Amino acid sequence: MTALVFSLGYVLLGLGLILVPASAIATLLPSLGRRRRRSLDALGFALLAWAGFLIVTGFAAIHAFLPALLWAAGLGAFPASQETGWHILFHNLHYLPLMATVVVWYILMQVLTGAKSVFGARFSKLVFSLYLVFVPPTSLYHMFLDPGLPEYVKVAGSALSLFVSVPTLTAFLVIVATLEVHARASGATGLFGWLRKLPWEHPATNAASMAVVNMIFGISLAFVLIQEKLAPLLSDTFFVPGYFHFFTVGTVSLSLLAGLTALLPELTGRPLRAPGLLRSLPWVASAGLLVFGSAGVAAGYMGVPRRVMDVTYGGEAPAVWSTLMGFVGLGGTVMALSLLAYAAIALASVFGRSETAEASYRAPVQWEALPVGRNAAWTGPVSILVIAVAMYGFSTLGFELLQAVPLIATGEMGH
Image (tube, rainbow, N blue to C red; front, side, top):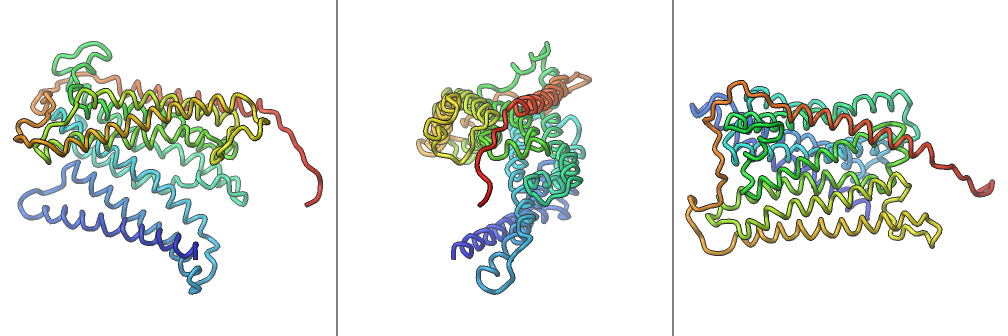
């Protein structure tokens, strides 16, 4: 019965992932060919690509769990190959919210500053297409723990995994370069002087900016786990929740909250409540996340398992495990309370005295008609270089620490 209900849930999820974006596509496409537009702009194309990604993931869910549903209902054979289907689905479910986050960044860039990509709409469309090209084939690294997986497949998985971050990093480069070029055209000087030109008065700028910073941490650490030699050693340790929260909470959640604070005043005609506090909370949440993630990653390197309620093991575990997990708890508490406060203030802004649309909390920067000229933009490429160095550094650290761990075998022969 449990397998039946569990599989039915995933099949229904797959149907939902197909039907919801299908209705969005049916709404978007009729605008073409009616003399209103000849082609989709970059944002329209991004939404279309994301909808396509949702539909593909929906079919992956049905493919993975329909055989199990039929087996549990007594209508089919045992799904011997379900593991592969699950890994493909699990991989896509990772990147659906990440692609949505990049779309939100692209939207916020235009809403908060009026700037559009300096690389042009065609290049932006190419970037969003890369998610459909690079994400599905790179799911092999989720199978590294399969004892029956041939060595050459593991090597291929490690090689393919290097491409999984290409779409996100390229979109990051487009957005950062666009903002920097426009800021320099408006008079910014110095390597990081352009950052002062951003509309920091708007809470969404602070939330989105911290989301980008957290993404840099997350993507640097992610490459440790997609290496065939390190994955078996770290996949069941606290390294996984330590690094993954930089993506789930630090990147996705903050980006969606940023989008919400930009959208709500336009929908309701009401200004955001406590805008000063909203500007501060993403920084506080990210500080808590940094403590949580750093301690969690260090705990993973030290061997602390995940999915364990008591890591002391009756006092036999190293004392440093409890110390690190104490920092995990402290950082997690700060992170959670900050995000809850942000969401609560945003929700409270829906209620109250209505004002005109002109009185809503708008960003003061308008770069839409600004001539950008030949201004250089070095922050994006330098950031990519820093990320590459960090990837190498965290991977090297992982190899060095794990090679130094003593191997202790205990037990007796027999069963």
